[in-house]
Amino acid sequence: MTSGERPRITVLPPEVAARIAAGEVIERPASIVKELVENALDAGAGHIEVEIDGGGIDRIRVRDDGHGIPPEQVADAFERHATSKLRSEHDLFAVRTLGFRGEALASIAAAADVDLTSRTSGEEAAAVAHLRDGRLERLGSAAAAPGTTVEARDLFVALPARRRFLRTARAETRAVADTIAVIALAYPEVAFRLLADGRLVLSTPGTGDPRDAIAAVHGADVAAALVPVSATRRDEETGATAEVAGLIGPPSLHRGSRAYLHLVANGRTIGARSIAYAIEQGYAGLIPAGRHPVALVRITVPPDQIDVNVHPTKAEVRFRHERLVYATVADAIRQALAGSATPLAPMPIALPGTLAGWSEADEAPARPMDGRDVIAGARPASMLTASSITSTPSEPAARSTAAGGADGAREQAGLGISARLPMLRAIGQIELTYLIAEAPDGMYLVDQHAAHERVLYEQVLTARRAGIPAAQPLLEAVVTPLSAPQAALAIAEADALAELGWGIDPTDGAAVILRAIPATLAGRDAAAALRDYLDRMDAEERLTGPDRAAASLACRAAVMAGDRLDGEQQRALLRSLEACATPHTCPHGRPTMLHLSREALERSFGRR
Ligand code: ADP
Ligand code: MG
Image (cartoon, rainbow, N blue to C red; front, side, top):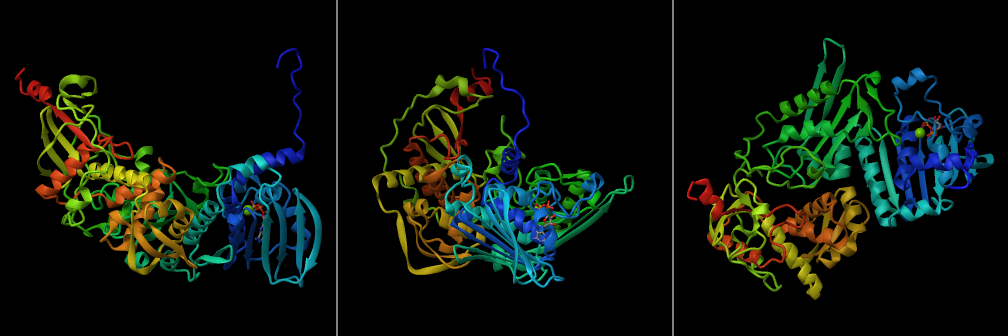
């Protein structure tokens, strides 16, 4: 702004301010569903039914049998900062309800057209309110059962910029299913139902037993395998207390993503990383690296020991005594797992410059060389047949037999990666995880899983480019039960999956009909392969679209750390790797190998 015409500072008109504030709370249909379901829970509902059309963009309806809103208060409920849940600033430090800001209904009304019908048990008729553009247009009454129904239509029609940010209806449906699944796990005493475009996506029985809720969300097999955990701690100095109760999976029940790790604090679903870490630590050495446990852990602390007012959508909380909570969770997990299994073969191979532990990158399964643990009682490498790792259909990449010292810059303490791959001669396998190979320019240590992943990934991409059908039809279609979020993912990504050979039809409920599987996975338990594959894909955040699906497939089909490879299989894998266009990294960018050059060897032994 030049020439002195700097705009005056003015207070925004209330409609504009409302729109801006609404954007903080209401990002997408799942945020509306979350707020409405939380209101229903705060009203003491025992049954909550959510219906969405078009991913919730067209219509969301949440119906509960809670205590309702008295007719004279209905209009107030839509005022900004109007709440029945807080009286004074003091209450903010001991919130017992999910809502407390009094913003949700006002924000939803600013983002969509809203109809509310609500009846308390003391009233004969229900109060009805109709809002448009955030303004109350009509108040009336009608016959209805006690409880509250809120319907929101045409989300963000008045906010085209925000509407453009919405994803496809399928993706939004999936986000809604995820939202309800995690809330339902936190409230096993409440019966939830989710219908998307008239199709039943999820329904929990509301028996009060968390195991029943888990069965509805993640399937009966998962639920049946879980064991109870509990622990209580009290800090003598501060008087602070923490109580932990829940259900966790045995080490044999591990999954490819963190989507099965649920944390609830005082009835709120939370994402607290440090606490999730406490749980994963309990499993360290018991489940393979890159795999994640299944757990539903409920934490209870006195209301004044948790700050819920730290995040606009209330997605995060802060514990006043975080270390106490951490220690209590760790206790509970440790006790439950004590004696549950012998640790996996330890001895991580320490290498310079490797990262272990928790990091952003750690979100993706399979970490870099953090000492990838070896699975005790190694599985036979039956799936690694010579045919599954023959060389790629692509032209072998140019080979260099004289990579030698040309890439000293990339060497690190004698361990470096040469720019191109020479011919490799297999020497053997160590830790059932790495292949040792010799080449004219020194020694190579190859991560068998990462390498096979790279090989399969290039094969999948090549086959896709060539239009070769990669599907293996099943003799008989299999009805495959999935978790509700998995089913939503399968349907949302049906096209990318079909390109890779997955033949999937939707069904009513948390299952799909599996007609074909990718040829690479032929011979496996089809249903298990699909479940694992979807988890893998869910965790695959760095890649998008078809590449994401391809990388997931490569990862699922690849030999794992812990698979024994015989000499022929080792040679086949190395040959295929030599033929890869980008042999040094797996599809996720992690290294497939380390190179110890002849020069480095000689230097190390004082030979030069
Ligand atoms: P908050 O939940 O933070 O109080 P909301 O805008 O979500 O704010 O709701 C405003 C008020 O409307 C609530 O405090 C509550 O009194 C009432 N209300 C909203 N939804 C329901 C419901 N489903 N059942 C009963 N009362 C409700
Ligand atoms: Mg609310």
